[in-house]
Image (cartoon, rainbow, N blue to C red; front, side, top):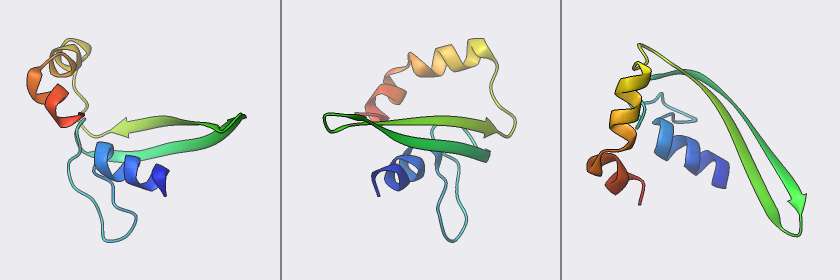
Amino acid sequence: MCAQGTVEDLLGFKWLGGGHVGMFGKVRGYLASVTSKGQGKVTMNLVVWLIKSPTLPQMKEVLQSVEFREKVQ
């Protein structure tokens, strides 16, 4: 359930009923894997394909903005 909440919150992708624009834009698709490293540590790896994805300079600007940081707190 943690993986589902992460995907819904960050990517705007809903498991049922479609999605909306997430933090990084509209998602075309994604691939996720959740693994356990032992000692109770869980890791989730995501590969995300965005529709009309931003350029690298645009992405850097967004990631460094106060608005983005407030969203991920």
